[in-house]
Amino acid sequence: MSAPRSRAGLVAAAVGLRLLFPIGWVLAHLPSGMGLAVGRRLGDVLWYLLPRRRRLTLDNLARGFGREMPPAVLRRLGRRSFQHVGINLIELCRYFLRPIDVMLSRVRVEGREHFKTAAARGRGVLILTAHYGNWELLAAAHGLAGLPLSIVMRPLDHPLLDDLAARFRRRSGAELIIKRQAVREVLQALRRQRMVGILLDQNATRAEGVFVPFFGVPASTSKGLAVLALRTGAPVVPVFLRRDPDGQGHCMDVGAPIPPPDDGNVATYTATFNQVLEATIRRAPEQWLWMHARWRTQPRGVAS
Image (cartoon, rainbow, N blue to C red; front, side, top):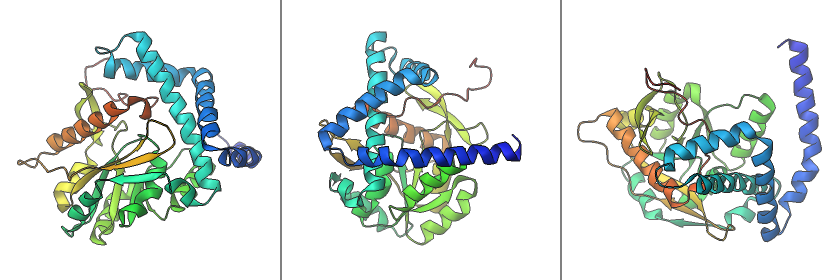
């Protein structure tokens, strides 16, 4: 794309975001029940407007639950996952455009003692998490743990959206670590006794990942978390923000540190992480981001 067109695209995006601001303000101030209803209908709209993501969601659900659920049930589950995304968008407006305490007042913590146990080792804490529940709100809720947080993130492709996302995450007080320079900065954060959050549920390239089971299907999974944990001795604590059944509250589930394998094998440790992720997703499968191309990278010799 030429430079003039790039600038024109940025200007158009900036104007679009400015025009959307009043809509976001209105959505942020809806009563809770109405916000849930509007979020679900927004998810329904996305279900019809994003056919490629809809097909990808259904393909992923067939991989994960195809032997357990009939197609009609999978389709309903896929639509509920889009509705959950819509609810998240309403909550992001509320979080970004209102005082942080408005959202944090709806978050409770279970397993807080596991943070203290992990931090007592004096090596920092690695957080295993995923695009599950309202994962952006999880960054803001780190203050409830009583420990400072750093987040490893991949920059978004669009610079304006990337800037917006970065400002959103910094508002929580979290420190941002760009993925391409992550190792050095993660090591520094651990030395400063910080928690470092890593979302491990995304597809990894062949160079970045190892193929380990996820819902019984080989999935290229980043080996970075296992390598860091084995190298530094930092404990890995699973943390997820799960939406309550009524849709309005959230529970921060903090699990016990995941022990490393006796032989120090990176693939074995990464497979254990995927087992934890899968067990969490199975508790409320509609709350995971099924529209991501999780199994895009395939083992050699396997048709896409």
